[in-house]
Image (cartoon, rainbow, N blue to C red; front, side, top):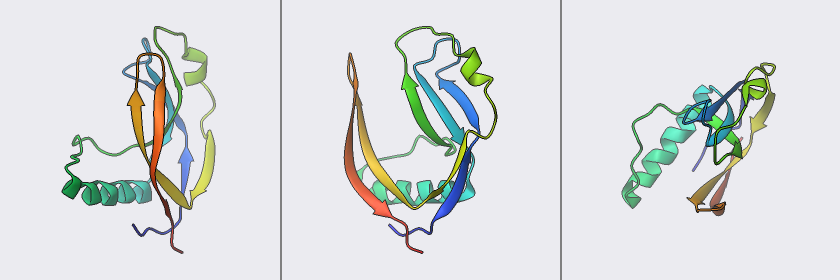
Length: 114
């Protein structure tokens, strides 16, 4: 899959499904280039039977997982502009959530082409 390197800034923080009972805590940001890349990946996976959920793409990184209610208010109020970096590669991962842990397997790595 071909893509050019691009920059992204992770400047927002949040939790899924919500901030009161977080299951996953994330940092994220918006990037037109990342959204285009996500669309390419989704199109490439269609012949394999994978379908998107119809939601707009939002670049993010999961930084923690939780099993219950937690106080993440200080984390969510943190400074904007968590970090900026250049995306020169991405890894297609499979995540399997189990009772006591999450397992992540690398399926394939892709490097940007300048």
